[in-house]
Length: 444
Ligand code: ADP
Ligand code: MG
Image (cartoon, rainbow, N blue to C red; front, side, top):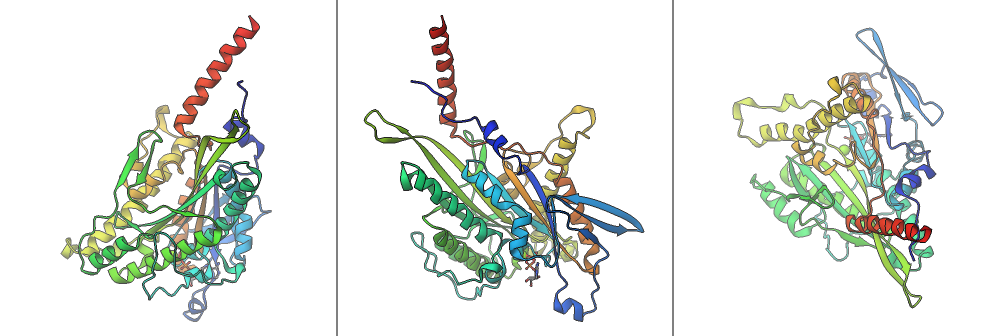
């Protein structure tokens, strides 16, 4: 017997209109003690945190006042919990549990609080001097006991996701089989992809980096069926609990610090991308009353800490173009530079300001980062951007640039969709046609 199994993705989305598909949250960090003692003053920005549904920022530029509106403006006094609440990530994590993709990324100049926002205090202050032993089977690094109020977005999102996973498992007749979570964690440095969870690769990466040699990094491939890029041979560790996922996270962060030290580069020049992949199997009753897995929904939560967005031209040493330093400056800019072009192209497309009704080219494939985030930008994912600013007068120029990109990003229109396995989607379409034929036969 054929029946409608569940509401269509569109109507699922309508169930909760309170989550915008794209949200841009501006977060300001306070003046740091050393900045005060160096005589930095407070920024001339005027912020209005709003009512929790939106907020605004005004900034003076050449005597002219510029005004920006965002989904949230998180003031310097806000705690991590308040930042979490104002950005409504929990609702977005619920969407991931329902089968939607979502991406959260932090953008801003180095030192503006991206890592503070994503990782939080204790992870950010992790002592990465000792090489961690990350085993493929079980992480051996113990998660540190962290004051919960200091946790950033990533650990909070991991815990919220596992809450949903446990609820699904408890309710579903497939039990633990109903939901599987895998975690991967990579770093993009110099347009090369490094696996932060693969111990053997990290060692050779570190050694090659330390010797100043080229390490080609992991390869990206196009999945024609699912129509997205994926990273070949990236470790995908299955996790049964939030604690386990966070141990991998912490091990990956430690690896990131070790790799930066070995390669003698600041970690602010690389992008990190942690992806939680949720595989949901939906059961149908078999002929003998048992439950059989039927269709699969795969959804991903991507959590991105971007490289510093400051202009790095000052570090270009044109007299030695072959030096690592020169290549680094150019390539680090590549992923961020293309990200900005993608944001600009999409904001023009979605504002309808594109001339002659023609959809402009969106250069996703011109960098590793934007290839991997293609679906998140102007696609079928939920998207949250944290635009990080420092509330100091020395940062006003970079702040303005960040606010401009943030405001372009805010006009991007994503169309979230549940990710049914393409094969299952095909079967569903066939079933729907059969159903229509069946109805027709009954009526005639
Ligand atoms: P980024 O990752 O953007 O380079 P960090 O997250 O490392 O910046 O932050 C730079 C410094 O500012 C760190 O010492 C961090 O602890 C501090 N900081 C950032 N945001 C806040 C905040 N909201 N409240 C207090 N300190 C913060
Ligand atoms: Mg950082």
